[in-house]
Length: 66
Image 1 (spheres, rainbow, N blue to C red):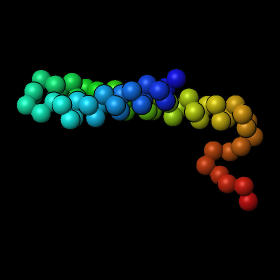
Image 2: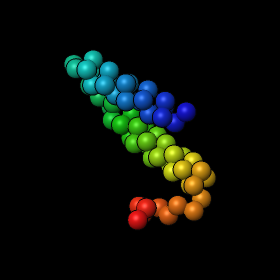
Image 3: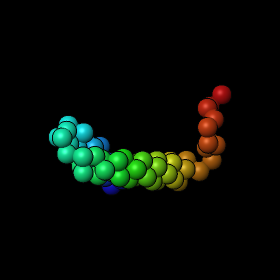
């Protein structure tokens, strides 16, 4: 679900970047949406990490099998 929200936000960012030329008020929306995109990406990453930890409870974070 969060990955889909990130994807939609990226698409909206691209569209605003392309079509906002000559409309300064959309530039502000573009900036606010950039902050929202960052927040959604962080949330998606945390959910993904939690899912991996639930699937592999003994795996240590940031280590490789040696």
